[in-house]
Image (cartoon, rainbow, N blue to C red; front, side):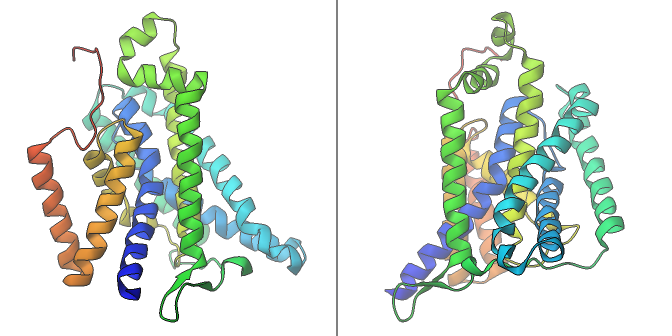
Length: 301
């Protein structure tokens, strides 16, 4: 029984990490149809913000305040990633709407530039982020089952992010404008919605969510300039499997991939498990190419 509960928890933990990484990409890809290959580098930015805030707390503040550094780093990662995402959209992405291949190549070039910039600033070797004391240890469920506080915190963080995004999309004027542009851009523009402003805000917000994901990933292991490249393919798989532009589809896609990946890795091996998951996704998309959840629209295109 303890082994089964552990496998379920591992699946939920992996799903929460994939969801936190993919949620920003789902907003960007679903709204603007921009294949942002630099999404992984915003994860890297968030992780390095946690590293910088940790060092600042260690050098400038008393030891008793160190436990609060990670909460501060989440806010710093959000603000910095949001700002860089806004600038990237204003300086480059805005000229590439409707040109998916060009946007893919351009953002891939941006990702290489950001990786090299990180190497120049922080060095090529990986660096470590020390978790605050209140995230050390784990919850003892049974004598054989211990749930790490770090992963429980990430699951709670993902749940909070999903709740905030849901409230924004379905209970605020800004969220209604975003959904209108996502469903029918031309009609939204005819009704007076500034699609240009919605695009900029959405791209910046998606980048900020990637920054929060990178900050959370810093709790699980060392970080380096290429940390984002390990997750970008999985993020795209979650978005495509869930259905473009649907929040509930992204959640379902992350849960499905996380649970199946954990189960298959346990019964086979890590490499074979990932291959089997990828094969199952391809087979499913052959049967249902629009993903798990499709968007209803009156658009004719």
